[in-house]
Length: 192
Image (cartoon, rainbow, N blue to C red; front, side, top):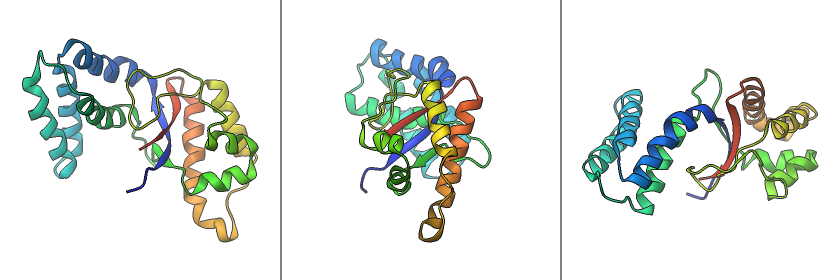
């Protein structure tokens, strides 16, 4: 499967208070207890099925590893489950991870700012995350969120041959509005 570029609604408080401390304890102190606790929480919320089985696999794999340094691959896998599961808010009517592969070029044609964001000329400058998922470790500033919101407000929803992008555009607007309205929320651009 080819990599997917995402703009994510990101809960900085959940990251700072829950995910990062557990991941730090595992990566630096070789104590998997906090990560195992988060994986158990995610397994319960996933119910039955393959996602729950994946969480259980990692619980069983790292639980006995107290005192042993996790490999880089293990940390990548764990971060890829824990961070989205804990730090991407689950809100009604909003997908917290908006794929921008299809809508990105359409937005870039309508906004120089979006063109810069899509090709890396505009970097998110709200801070670098110690742990992340995918390739993104930078979150947006509140000023960038305001810029993002202003740019979206200046663009009419997709019409005609682009009307199939309407749902993506609407979801992106919801993500940005929520990031604007809630102090602990930010935006994360990543590729998975």
